Image 1 (tube, one colour):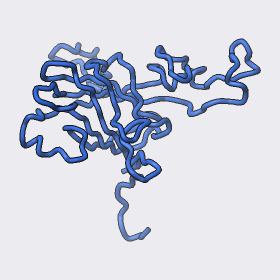
Image 2 (cartoon, helix red, strand yellow):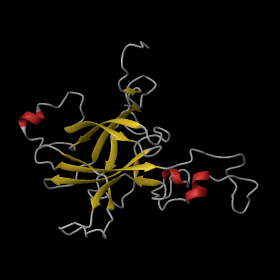
Image 3 (cartoon, one colour):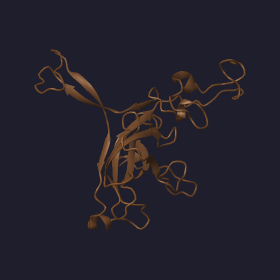
Image 4 (cartoon, one colour):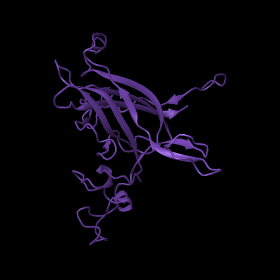
Length: 246
C-alpha cells in the first residue's frame, strides 16, 4: 500500500459465490431465486425466512446489499405485484453447533449420553418445527430474530397526536421496526418491458444500499400488493452482498 494516498471504502467480494465462481442469488439452489411465497401479508407474524447462511455477517459490519424484487410471472391479464414490503430480521446465535456425545440420545433423560444444540438450550426451540432438527436455527423464534429499529423522537412540546407528548424534561424515543418498501412498475408499460434482459426471469426492480448488520444471519418477512384478478403470484427476490467498512 502506498503511504501517499488516502484509503477509501474497503469491502470484500460480492457473495455468495458458488464453486464455479459465479454469484449465487438463491438459497440452497443457486439456479432458483429466493422464494418468499404467495401469502401477501406475513410482515408482522409470518415465518421468518432466512436468506443468508449463518455466519455470513458479524454484528456491526457495514453491508452493501444488492437486492432485486420481481413482479411475478407476466402474461396477458395476469396479476402482478405492485408494491413489496420486506422486514429485515437479524439472527442472534452463539455459533456453537454441538458437543461430544450421541445426538440420538435424549439430553434431558440421559444428560451424560447426548448433547443438545447450545442455541436451543439457551433460547428454546421456536414454534415451527424444523424439517431436520428441532433447533432454533430453522425456527420462527422471536427470541433469536431481532428487527431493526428506527427511532421517532417525541418531546413534551408535541402538538399533534398521536403519538402522545413526552413528560416534561424528557424525550421519548419510540422504537419502530424498519421495513424495506419498493414500488414496482406495471409490466404492461412498453418502456418498462423493454428493460427486461434475455436472462432475467421476469420483470423486477433492483436496488443497492448500505446497511449496518445487526446479527450473524439475515431473515425476511414480507407483504405485497397485487394488481389484477387471480391467484397472487409468488414473490421472488435476488440478494447478494459485500461486507466491509467505510
